[in-house]
Image: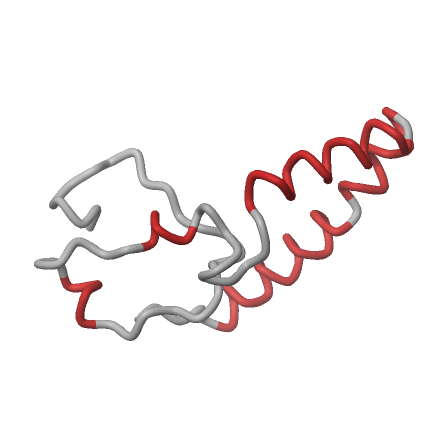
Length: 93
């Protein structure tokens, strides 16, 4: 399992503060109604962050022969999934 260093945690905190204001900035620029429609639309795609309520959950199933299959299955979806353009072994590592 990976853990953030103190520097990484500070960077994450900075990012979370910045992204928390994104909705407010977009609402000021585009209006409340379009933002509400966007949030409702995105919510329909992602569902709730739990195995029985999100269509994204099956995508987290690890490749059976990969190292991730040895880790305990998460109980919630990751907040910021990593998408690598590098590819690699069939489990994505």
